[in-house]
Length: 108
Image 1 (tube, helix red, strand yellow):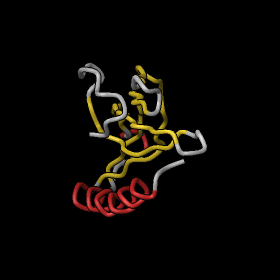
Image 2 (cartoon, rainbow, N blue to C red):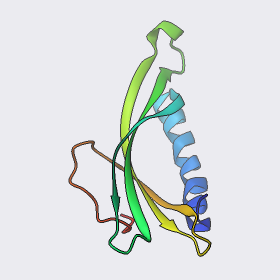
Image 3 (cartoon, helix red, strand yellow):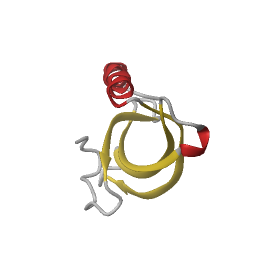
């Protein structure tokens, strides 16, 4: 589940992703969450930030399949609880796997 604000941000970023593909002549696909690095929960247990590592395949627009590259990225996923108690994604920020812990529940 994602907040309406987060969904709006993701719709906007689709335009940036298309620009990246067009300008860089590269396409990224087959993204997979490899593992959860860590999770930080706020003191009131109403929000949390989970750090995940994702891998994806990157291929140049005119490259052959044997020229495919694997790219690894790390993200902090900020979540809050809805009124009914379900977790809801409110923000996702690219980070490094060894970055200091974020403030739980404070989307950056």
